Amino acid sequence: MRQDIPAALATSSSVCEDFAHCLPGFTLTHTVHLVSGLDLGVVSTAAGVLDGEQVVVDRWAVTRCGDVLEQKIVFGEMTEGRATRLREQLAAVDGVLRAKIEHHFVRAR
Image (cartoon, rainbow, N blue to C red):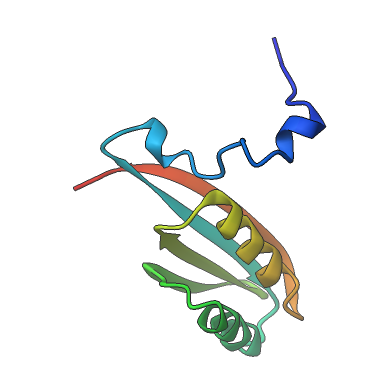
């Protein structure tokens, strides 16, 4: 059974934007996947976006797969909302073909 959150409630400030408190002993991390053509300028522009937003990147891997570049950018210690906004900014970078985000609860060390 599916229950949708009413639109008024979804935009309310009472809705929590960070669910990390729901699982004590876990931290919330985010992975953004970007796919672009073979233009390395997309990588440097993405780095500029993250630098301008003062984002701390935990890991960043760039892989060539045929005629495209795949970027896997992992950050932690931010809310889901901020991570989603960053994905939207990165998706708007000229040359990005596809962008998606994954939210992960990771057991604290």
